[in-house]
Amino acid sequence: MTDRPTEDVRDYIRTIVDFPHEGILFRDVTTLFADPRGFRMAVDRMLTPYLGGRIDKVAGLEARGFILGGAVAHQLGCGFVPIRKKGKLPAATISESYQLEYGEAVVEVHDDAIEPGETVLIVDDLLATGGTAEAGVRLMQRLGATILGCAFIVELPELGGRVKLETLGIDVRALCAFEGL
Image (cartoon, rainbow, N blue to C red; front, top):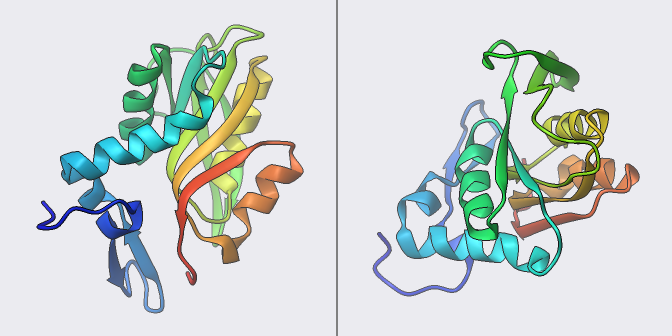
């Protein structure tokens, strides 16, 4: 818990130096999630731009996007769809690969998670290079969804994720940004 009131989401986010590698400033949102006021503020601010619009589903990117996406979906009164790492979903899936710094990763979604024409909001904790979010967008589009936008708590602008998503025509919103890696 914080010992003082705050109105900035950034104040609830811990920075861990040299994690997971030397030179990285890891933006840890678990401290935000642990604080009831901070967590509520983040969820409320993530969903506010979308109030009044039609949203059928919120899709959360593994894993912290599940925490946020479930809360946002609950508040919006719509369904939730998990976008998971390969091999974690029990029914028939479709897959999308994306590039990592050193290699490739794959995310999946159930092939019946979205009905064609449904409107989807994609949610995650952090936008860095945009690879995972782009893969999530492509999965939703392959199922026939209309993507309303992508919402994040933190953006690392220097890594170019916003540009990648906006090039696809996706509206991108982040509650705060941090410079550096």
